[in-house]
Amino acid sequence: MTRTCTALREAGFTDSADRLETVSTDREAWENYARQTFEAHARLYEARGESPKLRFLQYVGRGTRAFWESQVERGALLL
Image 1: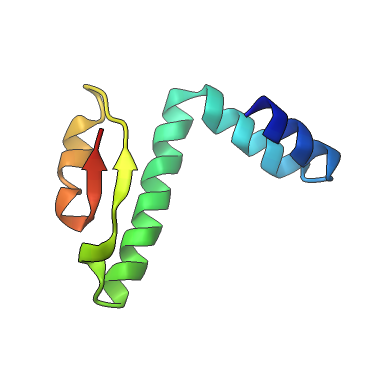
Image 2 (image 1 turned 120 degrees about the vertical axis):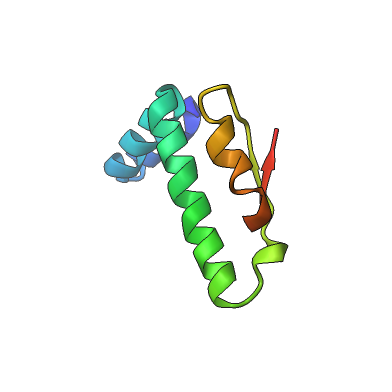
């Protein structure tokens, strides 16, 4: 991640590098990012009638397990 953030900054993508650095070092930010990403993908597949095809691998912990378990039918796979 460090190299990716550095490369993004060197290429002029400072905002993207800052966001990546935040989600890679802050558990709450990572969880929010994961949920937003999952929701966006799930809505897209559901709009196409393809929701069973979505497979979204997600590491879970005690504090996040309930949410992700509720998303299994939409394609979340808990790790």
